[in-house]
Amino acid sequence: MLLTIFVVCSLVFLPLINFNKTMATIESRNFIHHVQTELHFLQSYSIIKDKRTRFSIFPEFRTIKCTTSEENYFIKFPRSVEFMGEGAKIYNFEAGTGNLGNFNRMRFRTNDGQYIIKFQLGSGRFDVEKID
Image 1 (cartoon, rainbow, N blue to C red):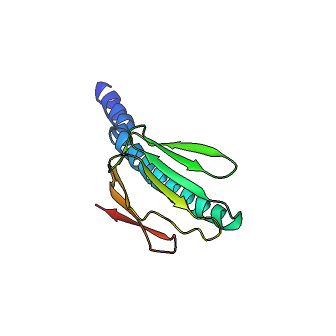
Image 2 (tube, one colour; image 1 turned 90 degrees about the horizontal axis):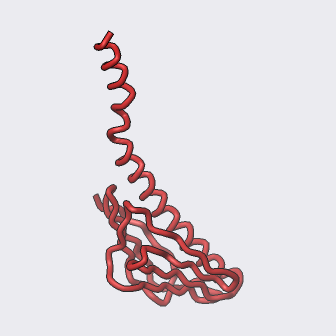
Image 3 (cartoon, rainbow, N blue to C red; image 1 turned 45 degrees about the vertical axis):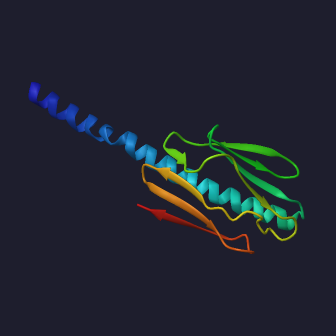
């Protein structure tokens, strides 16, 4: 009887051991995907509406600020994500073209690895590279 309870409890609680790590991995991947989506949105907005947009990273506040002509909104970093860089980074998408004035790379460290977002010169396009 005691052995049965032990086996049942082990089977129930064993998956919970890796649950936090799995949740942090999912959370960090969703965050990187969210950043990509917001960059695409801001670039498209600047082209279609012919208005400048801004993507600002504030690592000291663990926040990203997205600015359009109509609204400002914020994205908070999850606990599992760290921005690698010092000071605020501001990326402006030019009105009408969507081109960037700043080509600095964005680096994020997660428990899943390191992600680098690289911008291409003159086009505003970007690539996301994962380094394990």
